[in-house]
Amino acid sequence: MVIMVISSTRPIIRLAESCLRSFAKLGGGGPGAWWLAILTVGPLLGSLITEPAAMTIASLLLGRQFYERKPGPALAYGTLGLLFVNISVGGVLTHFAAPPVLMVAAPWGWNTSFMFRHFGLAAVTGILAVNAVYYLAFRRRFVDLAKSATAQTQVPERGNERPIPVWVTVGNLLFLTLIVLVGHYPVLVIGGFLFFVAFVEVTADYQSELSMRTPILVGFFLAGLVIHGGLQQWWIAPLLGRLNELPLMLGAIALTAFNDNAAVTYLATLVPGMTLGMKHAVVAGAVTGGGLTVIANAPNPAGQSLLGRHFPDGIAPLGLLLGALPATIILALCFIFIS
Picture 1 (cartoon, rainbow, N blue to C red):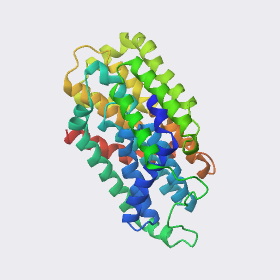
Picture 2 (spheres, rainbow, N blue to C red; picture 1 turned 45 degrees about the vertical axis):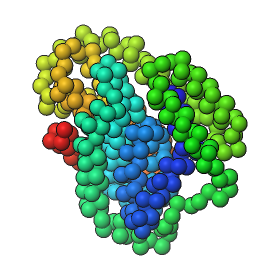
Picture 3 (cartoon, rainbow, N blue to C red; picture 1 turned 180 degrees about the vertical axis):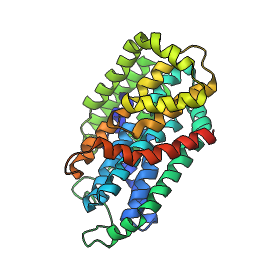
C-alpha cells in the first residue's frame, strides 16, 4: 500500500512520463513511436514503480496520444489487450511490484535477483516480441494515424504546473527505495511512511494530493487473500499437486482469467512439496493470463476506468479477450522456452 501511494505522487509520475517522452522522440514522436514506447517501457517501469502506477501512466498517455485519434475497433481492442498483458508480465523483474509475485516472494524466498534471473529474459523478450507482432499487423493503420490531420506529434505540455525541482523528485525516489528495502520490517515501513508524509507537506507546492483510497483497497484485498485463502487449501492443494509443469502453467492461465492472478499464486503457496519448476510454471501462467479479462490482474480496473470513455459502447469482454489472446499465447511460449 505504501509503495503504491509513493509511486502515484506527481514527481514520480512526471519522471516516468519524461522517460517515455524521450523514447517516443527517438522514433520520431509519431503515434506509432508513442505506441511502442508506452507499451514497451511503461510495463517494464512497473517492476520499479509497481504495476498499478505503471498502468495509470500508460493508460493516461495512451488516451492522449493514441485513443483520441480514433484508431478503430480492432486496433483499439488489440492495444487494450496488449496493455493489460504487458503490464501483468512487466512487473516480474522484481519481487515487490506485481501482486502475484508479492504473494509468493516471502513464502518461497524469492528476491529481486531471483526474479530477474529466472523471469527477466523471458518477460523482456516476450514484451518485445508481442509489440513487434502487433505493430506489424497494424502497421498500415499506424501510417493512416500519422497522416491524420488532427494528429498531434507530442503530448501537450502542462505549462500551468510549476516545474518540479530535481531534489524533490530525488527525495520521493529515496523514500520509495527505502520502503522497498525495509519492506519486511513493519515498524520501519510505517515510520518511513510518516516521514514521507511530512516531506510531502513541506514540498506541497510540487506534490499532488496523496492518493490513499485505491492503495488501501488493494492492501485489504491482498490481506484478505492471506486471511481467507488458507480455507481453500483443502481442494487447491490436491488439484495443483497432481499437475505437471506444463499443465500447471496452462491451468494457471485459465484460472487467472476468472480470478485475480494474485489469488492463484497465493493458493499455490499452500501446496506442499512443489518443485522449483512447478513454482515457476504457476507464476508464469498467472502473470501471462493477467490480460484476458478485467478481473485477471489487480491494475486492470484502473486501465478500464481511464480508457473506457474511448469505447462508445463500453469495453466488451469478448473484444478484450480477442485482443489479448495472441499476446498471451506468445508470452506463454516465451516463458516455456526461455527460462
